[in-house]
Image (cartoon, rainbow, N blue to C red):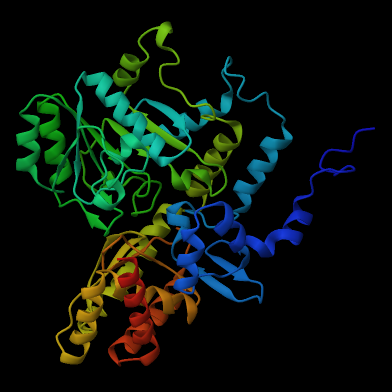
Amino acid sequence: MSPAPGASGPGGFDLGALLAERGGERYELHARHLNHQLPRMLRTIGFDKVYERAEGAHFWDAEGNDYLDMLAGFGVMGLGRHHPVVRRALHDVLDAQLADLTRFDCQPLPGLLAEKLLSYSPHLDRVFFGNSGTEAVETALKFARYATGRPRILYCDHAFHGLTTGSLSVNGEGGFREGFAPLLPDTRIALGDLAALERELGRGDVAALIVEPVQGKGVLAAPPGFLPAAQELLRRHKALLIADEVQTGLGRTGDFYAYQNEPGVEPDLVCVAKALSGGYVPVGATLGKDWIFKKVYSSMDRVLVHSASFGSNAQAMAAGLAVLSVMDDEGVVANARAMGDLLRGRLAAMVPEYELLHEVRGRGLMIGIEFGRPSSLGLRSRWTMLQAARKGLFAQMVVVPLLQKHRILTQVSGDHLEVIKLIPPLVVDEGDVDRFVTAFRAVMDEAHGGGALMWDFGRTLVKQAVGNG
């Protein structure tokens, strides 16, 4: 007799038993079989923690200590961890035992999710579902090239659109591109440089401009007026506007999409992913205008000219539908705007108090805290020591005590940047804001007071940077 569903028969797979037996080897397993630099890096900065469970904007270690998540899995955990509505939807879709991914039928869930997703951007008509943000970008690049018949894509300095070869070709950070040439012959312009955009468009071979309305690397927003003016130039030259909303979309910046901050902006293609997954099932989506999709899929012969093996799978579609339902029912976008304004305002008020604190910027719950050269002699000498070794070490010095002393997880915004990026779950509340501000003030007080432990750790980072150099 076969075991009952969910039961484990003789020799069957038992996930709980496996984790109980081998879970303690997690760092050794990564060092042996995966990216060996990850556990090395985590141990160097004291991030080699063991987290046991998570809920909402918090997780807990084996001792029951509570940690505040200001990273949200690089933006994936928009609703926080293990939202009950998303969990229930996934249980329901598994229990339904749907005939999924037959490849030769039309299941209802992809159509329902596309319909719901398009309701937030009524100028767009169709959706392609893939598995990630970089795949959403790849789709947009392919569709733009095919629809316009032109080869070149324009992108911006410091842009990050993913790490597969096509999206890497429009990545504005040299460190990610190094060693992976040849890439596609795309062209970089400065964010906000309308003159450069017009000059490149004048060559007649540009398919599209791809842009993050707020860049993830450094948290740099497109200058006011740039997106509408760029859209006008692109339309005049019969090129497309692609909005990469993989990180900024689904409420992150206090609007459902970040491009909606400026009236009249209507991108031809929009890329989303991350938070649409509910933190469970990878999903990416490329939204676009009807004529673009109809040109790509112009005949039955081209029905599979662009597809994804796991795209539109039932679990991902159920997660996406549940996420959008929660966002509507619980006022998630409004909360992101309110908590973002509160957090950014309280941090910005600290800038005059601390000479190492240069600027606080961002929109909604996407906030950049930038540090800069201090004026006093003692602090300036320490700052210079760090900068000589590697730019970005001071920001790392702030991230570490936030975790080790205050149990708050944050991230440095990018390589060689003195910027911390805050992208917490969109469900954080005033208590979470208070906790972060109090902890950040304590770290700033220690840094400006010449705290020995903090600056000793800075010297450790300097040795590590010099050794890697």
